[in-house]
Image 1 (cartoon, one colour):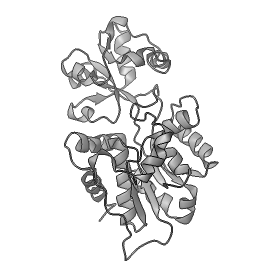
Image 2 (cartoon, helix red, strand yellow; image 1 turned 30 degrees about the vertical axis):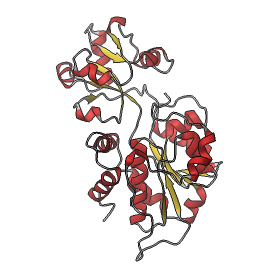
Image 3 (cartoon, rainbow, N blue to C red; image 1 turned 45 degrees about the vertical axis):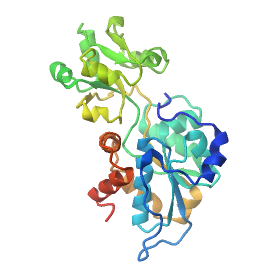
Image 4 (cartoon, rainbow, N blue to C red; image 1 turned 60 degrees about the horizontal axis):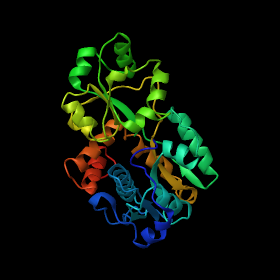
Length: 316
């Protein structure tokens, strides 16, 4: 898409951004960097960064607090910038770790065609980036991609759990208004690809075109039955919408993973296993709820991260 929240900034701003020391994104405060005196690990300081949008800041802060709690020496470089800023900072060694999405790596860094299976996407970018001295550690189950959401009353009426369930209703002749965006309707990897994967043709009169961001209000006002959405957006939770399972993998995968300079991985043999414990508890629903706490409930990202880590036994 290649992800609405991952738009590129100019590389020219890199030096200025780095000089500012990495302002922490989304208005949250990060904990003071340092090591626990009774269990500090010996080795280079791990400079942890993030992109600027809420989800990225949460992932970065989770890593910062978690690793600091384990005794790793860490430095807060949160909110550095988007791909064109943060990627050169990583490869140049000005930062050591941030979270990236497999789909972004495959399509934006490798310039590869979209991949629709999680393990395939991960292996592609992991092997490619290893040559650049960058390690992609174990990816999280969370997948920040396109999805189809349904009003709960519609899901119950038509017994919709998967996208195939929806397609079956269309083929039966049911009229279900589908809310989408103008860009997605015409993109090769949008509606045409969606129809091809699920082997159906959406009736033209069923497609409701709205500006991006108005999809939820359209459903709320009952001017649509289903809508194109992004799988980790808070409105899915607050509006109690049903996310249909993409059972035929129509949408590219964007699993989040810690991306680390290989020198740091080599310096800390336990780092990959430690971060895997964090990645493993971050599924799509979990990160959506954490995004909601920050964006809707207006909790600080520091608080959201600390509370979650403690609830999982990953921070004392």
